[in-house]
Length: 309
Image (cartoon, rainbow, N blue to C red):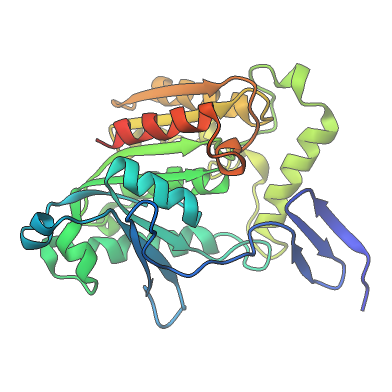
């Protein structure tokens, strides 16, 4: 076995020449449970017994009156257990956090397909006829939001594009009313915004290599100008299937300008919705997960909660 490192993407993953993948972050797990601090309850569900696709559902603390006469809550489809407990409590939403297959072990489009299957499963609960009681009782499928950070933001965008462009395969029974993209993982061959000054060629190549790894050697890879990675190159961008978008960027994040560029291209595409970009000064990529109690992360939480309601 060749134990030499083929790719190293700090601080996330090492990929060895013999095919092994060593994840350095994101491997710790916590069981679903009732969170004593927030009163938020969570449970794990199997979406497909064939593929093994699963998700974790979250609902806010329920009062006796809400148990007797359930109040429908907005549905949010992002990740990370403790952060979601806080978000569900603050915003009073139902969350479906999808455990999608991750690259490079499972090259794209596996993650996109898994999240589409999860969205289809959510839609199957229209009219209270689905397999999960929580979604039947508490999820308002006329107010569905997509959300994610980094790669999850990329996936959320592409789910909204698929819903708006798939014709006869459009999911019935749900209404996408908004989307939250936090530090979205978009890129392109041509620099935008301040990238010529802030992203030296080595950084640009590293970001492009992450996309190459995600696509895998056997997939059809059109490079970082693939519309999946560069929405500005998508001729169908105006079909984005939600009327409101909130984009968060961080000042020190190399992906910052891509969030601003995304909003600019949305407006120019002919899309009829409203998009807002908020920049966190002095912060870096997914700072809200690394330091969730800092002032800017708390502000983000409240802003997201207001957007959802």
